[in-house]
Image 1: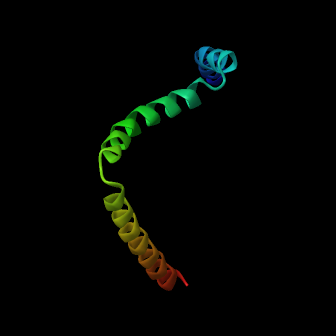
Image 2 (image 1 turned 180 degrees about the vertical axis):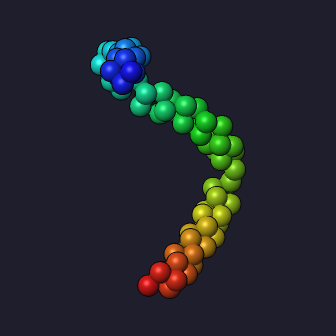
Length: 77
């Protein structure tokens, strides 16, 4: 029974490994493409904003992040 189960698992994994050897980076490229198309919508919306407003929000976000990191450092250390 154990040998039969092992053979079934091996037989079912052959197509996966064949596809992986044929196109080794296809999964990576698919993730890059989906991430880029997802982020493109937000980049286009940011491009329509004023640069001064974006700099202001970035400065606020950076100060909040630094404060958060300090609090985490105090809790951890």
